[in-house]
Image (cartoon, rainbow, N blue to C red):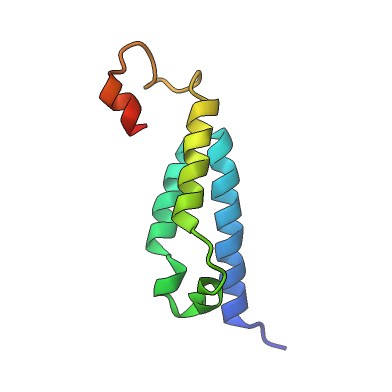
Length: 93
């Protein structure tokens, strides 16, 4: 009764994806870390990600969208957003 390593890594990737996506809504820095994490562990580039590549999930886009929403929802908590922001900085965010 040995576990399937493909299924375990796939499950870990999906769990981390859900964690980072949901976490970005409450703590935007979690979204930044999640974006970098999924950039390095992109399933299409890994042998164990072939199963997920068929799903058509857009990991980076989804985490980025959650990061944007989390930044807007938590802008009152973020120190970098304030009156000192210039218009091009708002566009970057």
